[in-house]
Length: 186
Image (cartoon, rainbow, N blue to C red; front, side):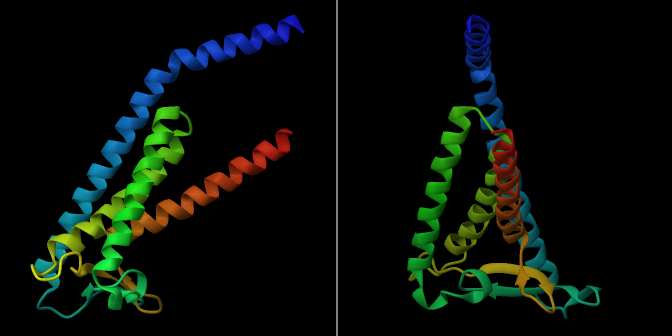
């Protein structure tokens, strides 16, 4: 019994000694991913507006093309009729996600979760920037999101959507795998 208590106390001491470093690394990862993701998204959207505005779709593959569209709603144009309420709800979701990410960083564990949820946040922020910056003065938070990646059998979307959806899907897989491993260890 003494050996187990000793090993446990050593493990706790190690975790406590590395916690500040893990917090720093987590915060750095989160800030860099969000910043790089938002900048990349906004840069590509400006490029799409400049290049695709007065041109036909640019076919990349038989079912994939670059085609400019402006989306007043959220996914697949849903919610456009709710106007600024959609923007307010999205900002609330992003604030909650930011808080959750801060808790993950503070706890200093699961760097992969921090990375993936930072991607989700980057995607959300990129699209909210469109809602704010492309809105008319008379109707704040009603700006249209710039979409340009067109899959003929699916939808038209943008890099921010790829970050958000890809981050969520990858995070779900990570959580499921982690849960299975924990169940197997018990």
